[in-house]
Amino acid sequence: MAVRKVLREHQLAVVLLVGFVVFDLFLLGLPPFPVYDEIVYVPVAYNMMELKPEPLKPIVLGSPIVVASNFNLTVYYPNQTLGQDFNVEQPPLAKAIMGVFLYVFSPNVVSYFWARVPSVIMSIIAVVSIYGIGLELFKDKRYALLSMMFLNFDTLFWTASRTALLDIYTLAFMMLGILLYLKNHKYSSTVFFAMSILCKLVGVFGLIAVIAYDLILRKDRKKAFMDNIIRASLCVVLVVAGYTVLVQFFGVSHNPITNFFLYLTWARTQNWTLTLIQGTSPVSQPWSWLFNQTPVKYAWVFDPSTGLPLITIVGQMNPALIFMTIPVLAYSGYEMVKFKTGANTLPLVWFLSAWMPYLVLSFLGQEQFIHHFLLGLPAICLAVVYWLKTQSKVFLVSYTVFLIVAWLWAYPYALLWLYLAHSSLYPLPPLNFFFGA
Image 1: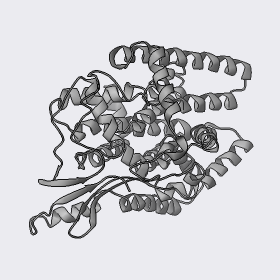
Image 2 (image 1 turned 180 degrees about the horizontal axis):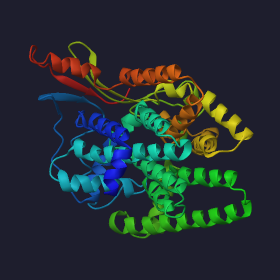
Image 3 (image 1 turned 120 degrees about the horizontal axis):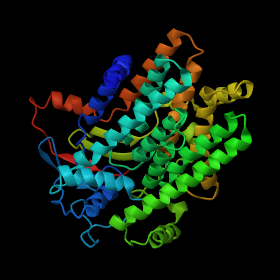
Image 4 (image 1 turned 90 degrees about the horizontal axis):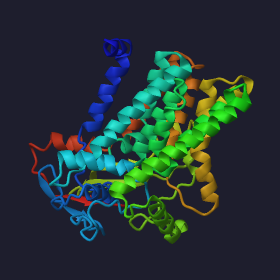
């Protein structure tokens, strides 16, 4: 009965959510081969579940394709010990979740569809969370819906939500933690911050954001300081406990300390100033994220007879959001100085918590990429909505239309739809897959 009441009260949000999920699931299996770091995470997920799936046989629209890549996409790390998470670069939780789906739904044949389904579920958690966060901050369903729409129609978020990458797991658990914190579940929210960190270490940005938010808004600073010491300590305990359990099942070493030092050893071997992706380096340092992003080219499928890309998956922010980042955050900061409220404080501290660490790392010589900014995207969406509340309805509607059009412009399957529409009239030519630049 309570569920029915909630659905009735937020029926427009439910309708939008269903639409978002349909778009996410549509053509989710394309391309049926690795997109970007899926080439690492999907084999790892299978290996963690002690599975040896059938070799990859790339087929698109019923036609075999030629794989133009330096990687052998048909071999799944045959020399690795089954059951181990040999990708020590990242904690095991997200890969374990992905592995469970593969174990249940496609244990024998490699399936990128089922590897990506958990990402769709995580995107649902993120979109629902920002709707709830919008309700808490703006006290108005209309602006909560806008927050929800803006996040979903950011092209970087949308790409992450339909690929088997770890960032969407980190973001989803982080946002759920922030929502629970705003709803005054301050300690139970820490569980989800810990889960975010166990997906990727940068999940700690969410905990930093709510601690900063709490210290700024609470009048009793001494009590706020003590509460946050307890919250941070609880998170450390949960992360250590969770990591210890995960490495018992999947660690290269079952000793969590030894396993963590494997990560440190790996990190020391990396030349962070020469990070390469398939022979190219789409470097985009944090200051460029706000002015001149360098898109990360995830994958294409193209028709060699015409040279037209039928599928174009690129990691990039929606231009309707990226160019608004500085103005709306400056506005939030100005409003926060005048009068501190959750609506103007949270977007700013969230953005700074997700952006400043990368800025510091870039000064230390480490290259960054635009997809690292995924954790800061919801903050920009909330800041844009906060600013739009002061604008006319005509401007608000016009901006929303522009944002959706910009998303459609970057939609990966636009030309594929045209191709499919003519498939009954023309024989399908062989398709080529190109990974990288």
